[in-house]
Amino acid sequence: MGVCGIVGYVGHRPALDVVLGGLRRMEYRGYDSAGVAVLDGAGRLTVERKAGQLANLEAELDAVGRDGFAGTAGMGHTRWATHGAPVDRNSHPHRDATERVAVVHNGIIENFAALRAELEAAGVELSSDTDTETAAHLIARAYAEGDTAGDLPASVRAVCRRLEGAFTLVVTHADRPDLIVAARRSSPLVVGVGAGETFVASDVAAFIEHTREAVELGQDQLVVITRDGYTVTDFAGEPAQGRPFTVDWDLSAAEKGGHEYFMLKEIEEQPDALANTLRGHFDGSGIVLDEQRLADQDLRDVDKVFVVACGSAYHSGLVAKYAIEHWTRLPVEVELASEFRYRDPVLDRDTLVVAVSQSGETADTLEAVRHAREQKARVLAVCNTNGAQIPRESDAVLYTHAGPEIGVASTKAFLAQIAANYLVGLALAQARGTKYPDEVAREFAELEAMPAAVRKVLSTTEQVRDLGRRIADSKAVLFLGRHVGFPVALEGALKLKELAYMHAEGFAAGELKHGPIALIEDGLPVVVVMPSPKGRGVLHAKLVSNISEIQARGARTIVIAEEGDDRVRPFADELVEIPAVPTLLQPLVSTVPLQVLAAEIARTRGYDVDKPRNLAKSVTVE
Ligand code: M6R
Image (cartoon, rainbow, N blue to C red; front, side, top):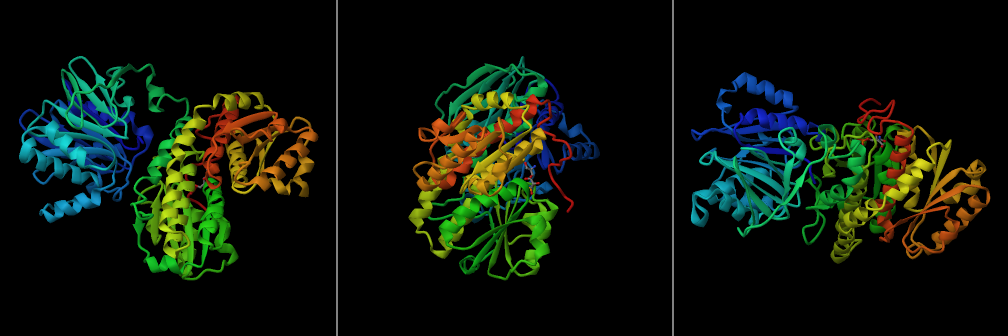
């Protein structure tokens, strides 16, 4: 995970300065609002929070005066919106009704709707749309009454036991300016151990200028920090151990999580991006979308689907077409958003337009959405940026929770888009009854196994990096694939163009003989994405003959194939093995070596892979 930035401090310095410094160090992660809380010895807990950049928060602190923030214990947060738009009242820290407890949170509390209903039934008024605020109220109640009364760590533990999902929580109470409590489940949390001061953070970057001595907490652990040190327990209160380590990064590397480039960090984050995108979208009986402003009947009435998107997002749509048609028996057209409205597409109220965009601000996609709505089509956005324009103008939304993507080249957002598009397909199939609930559950379980498969690919990338260095001076590279491997070939070529400024083309392998084979010359690298020999047996055999044809004409064949695919081995000058996964899910693993290859070729050629020339992360002009 690791989406929001969190820092907490108990020590001898002014906490506000330490916390703001920590938040600044984590700015690289991207965020849409920020906030701080400081405790002083006189039992005052002072909070300030603001939508937008840290500069907005600092201006607000100057406006209200920093005198109220004089304590040496405090915490801060930079938020990347998940539940609730990025506005002041949804920014962290969140407090309970008495304003004695403050909480910052990273992650998603999956059972927050039930917890919220419980609090409302007990007469608690919630002041934000977030899942986090429920934790603040629950902890305040646990601290006020029952077995845990007056014991902040025990109160936090009791609430953690009730939370489902992934979270890092940092909690303060005005009664306890001497300590801060933090807890984690499936979301990062590290302790920084200094002399007479202790830190907690989602990322060592937050405290690395003060100490390099760190302790990583394990799953379902809680830590209490004071200026003299820290104590770890599990959620039942039993003593537990963190993993101490010494940070050996310098400051600039720490901001990129120890990586040379954001893109390399984002490639590594793909298993988490996938897991977070899937999390909370299956409730035991079916697929759940995020903001559903469409009636079930609308989904049942859909008779045609368009996916509109640009660049990598468009490729994610091409991948999804295979799955959505197969699962729903609906025709799916995938269209470049920039072309869509200029050709007068046939749309009506039974057409579902799926608009896929990482940024949610891409002008071509936004205009396609507006055109579709004018024609009365229903629009469902798949977007990585909460509250962006495209989701705001759509009838329904499914957010990819890939976290902020800073490298211009799309990597983790692309994989998350494929997963989210698949969820849309399954939601349609369940609404239309083309899949039984147990079949939907099975497909979802297969998707849930994908983060582990991607992690496996990531553990074996050295071979691909070495290959990248060896072919970095090639004039051009071709990419071939069939079925879902065809859009993967297009994506591999796009990555190479934008990062390495190298001529690269992706083709459907069956088209080769209709023209592109004329391009093959001695030594030309050709990357081939093989289908599974089991899943698409006929296509596999055809692709093996395509490879033998190009190899016979002198191409240097680089073959991405399933482990144990012995039939293709004799035709592969370089064989890159990927784990065997279900046919429709193969793009989630086969794309990864192509991303690594493009990044390594670009690095070898001396280019900045985060900021390729002539490109912007978000293209807000048509
Ligand atoms: O923010 P969006 O997903 O709408 O962006 C679409 C394209 O501009 C984007 O995918 C672009 O192609 C990437 N640079 C590809 O790596």
